[in-house]
Length: 153
Image (cartoon, rainbow, N blue to C red; front, side, top):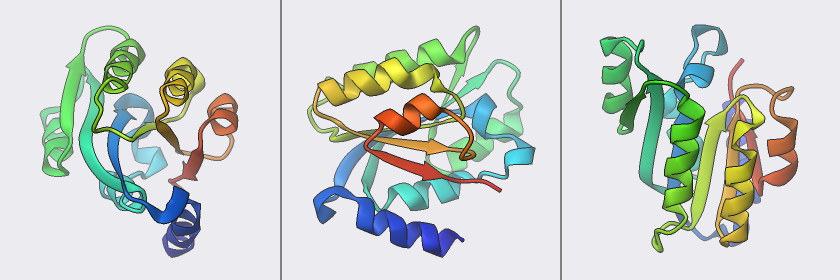
């Protein structure tokens, strides 16, 4: 299945031109045992679009040290937040819109909470990529993003 997905992505990347990516991962919604999503798979899929220049995984204060270490070992920055993770993640994503070296913004999530950030990214001329855990999730994101990728089971 992963090879089929990679072939589809190669066709879907705009103009075949590699981009500088900012990637924001909704840890509590994505890094769940039942979803079986590996950060390495996320990196591999996004490699078809470009190079990750900003890569952050947002976790809550209850994240285990083992999980934080695994995130860092995959080359991502772990951002531990107290309170609403979605707000912190959206704020960082919007901040990256003003980084002139970033061409594309990717959200890895299961819900549509990041729709305003995706819309704002498009308004600022950034390519938008949404990686979802399942096809039934985040309809609004699927209908708005430039590229939609499904990972998981």
